[in-house]
Length: 221
Ligand code: DX5
Ligand code: ZN
Image (cartoon, rainbow, N blue to C red):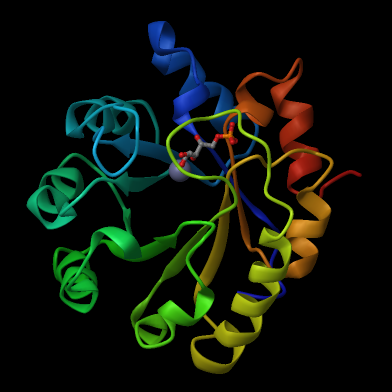
């Protein structure tokens, strides 16, 4: 993925759910590449969000890539439903999938791109065997469960490690970073090797989301 401009994925978690269509349109207007949708089950993470029904509603509002982040245990049960609802990319957690290779192949067999996410305490080395099969890795830079948390600084070193591993094993794979992304840390995150930035609070709670998006994408610093 190296050499292309930074991809931006606003996280719907911080959007105004009383006016979802307007929130999605704002992301589109800001030139966002993906709409990041955070699915939480109250078991894998200490919060509950939404299921395929909301993904279907977001899909109906946009032509952006629907990037679904499943923070749920045993995601295989629901992967087909999320793809049917419009998800182009499905990311599961390494920590939630005992048979990760099977899960990744299952996502691909249903025609979606396959991603794997790791929590801040999970080492990059746990991805070594699955890396050649992945379309993306979603590196968590906060403990998943909530928007608006502070970026964990040691994530930058993990991004650099993953970047080196990716270049050797699967150069076409996308590195996305999720959690606590701001205008202040975006340059360091991209400098370490991230291709895609997930931004909830920084985008939707910004005074001027369109201008913030341009800064996050590196179009103006
Ligand atoms: C956290 C979610 C994130 C979250 C990011 O569990 O996976 O996608 O929405 O929100 P911010 O950008 O506010 O940290
Ligand atoms: Zn997420």
